[in-house]
Amino acid sequence: MTLSLHVEDLSVKAPGGRVLLSCERFAAAPGETIGLRGPSGAGKSTFLYALAGLQPAMTGKVVWGETDLALLKDGDRARFRRENVGMIFQDFLLFEELSALGNATLAGAFSAPGKRRMIRRGAEVALARLGIPAAPRTVDSFSGGERQRTAIARALAHDPAIVLADEPTASLDRATADKLIGDLVGLARTHSRTLIAVSHDLNLLKCMDRVIEISDGRLVMETSPA
Image (cartoon, rainbow, N blue to C red; front, side, top):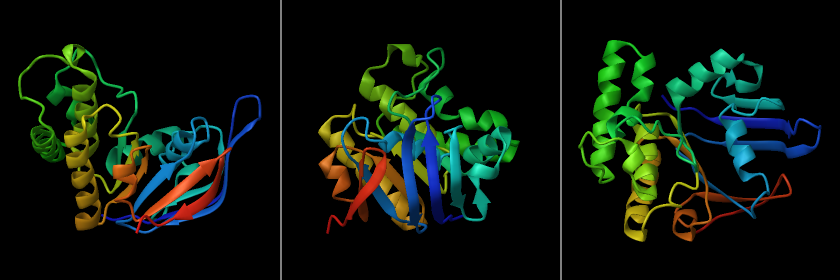
């Protein structure tokens, strides 16, 4: 499956009513790779999480294919993410008591047996590619880089149509980061997966089709790395 993106009149507000993000119009084609950059607190992660339907106080349209996330109830949004989105969080969000494989296959717990087997195989392949051993030790003993790679494997295990990444290379050494960039971009272009990544990593940004500058909660500039 491939999914286009259309955003219109998107607004995200803080509990007190302050506008955190405002976007009049934004679009992405299936298979596009898009980088989001800007200073800390500019709204990059807020925009990324809105695209995943993880911002409760948002209005406007966030349409993936034929599905407007802004119109869905919480359970339906969660189902859409589970089936279509691979999220790479900056703070990992792993279960400390589980192994790398246990974390990377979590989506399988909510899936049919056939899908569960596919997710397990995808997790095994992703972990091996990222250099995480198959040992049963739990992630509470992992380094920051190992945690990041486990979180990335979890995001890719179910072969999502959409990959949304928040600083995916931040905890990785340069060689591992560059290999990951190649994998993510290759996945997007080979299988028409949409990749949108928040990053300060110039090596990642220069590989994107487009780079969006976000400042003070607004998309202010678009550039092409080429």
